[in-house]
Image (cartoon, rainbow, N blue to C red; front, side, top):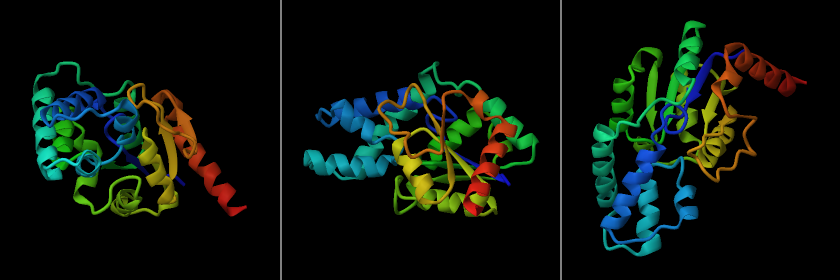
Length: 227
C-alpha cells in the first residue's frame, strides 16, 4: 500500500530550471568557459558541487569546485529575488495538498542546496505538508547514486516498496530505481533530453497521478512483485 511520496524539487515542484540555466551560464561567462548544451543537460538532477567538480576537471580550471559553486549560487540568489517568473509547476500544489489530506507522508529529496530548498519552501508555504527535506548537497554521493532516496524512504518511516518517487531527470530516475522505489517520471518542458525509459510510468501532467491513481499504481506494482 502507498504510504509515502518522495518529491524531487527542481522541475517537479517548482519551475527553477530557467533560473538555474541563467545562473549556471552567468557563472560559465565569469570563468570563461563554453559549455555545450548536451553537456549542460547531462548535469540535470545532480548537485551543484558535483557539477562544478566535473567542470573543473573537464576544462582544467585553476579554481576550486567550491569557488564555482559560490559564483553560481550568488547568481541564483539574485535571480531568485528579482525574477518574477518563478512559479510552482502547474497542478503540483493541488497534488501535494491532496496527498497530504489523504494521509500520505511527504518527503523532499532534492539535489538543491538546503538554503535554496528553504527559500522555495518559505516562498510558497510548503513546509506545512512535508515531514522532512533532504538535500543531496549534504550527502557524499549525488544522483544518480541512490543514497538520497534510500535516506528519504528512511525519513518517511516506511519501506521502499511503500514509497513512490516523482522525478524529472535521468539522474533522478536512475537514483530512484537503484533504491528499488517505484518511480513516476514527470516529463517537464524544462528538463530537456532526459531519458525516462527507467521510470515505471511517465506523466506530463499532475492530473495523471491523483491520489487514487498513485495508490492504484503502487498496489499493482507490489502485486506484480509477489506473483
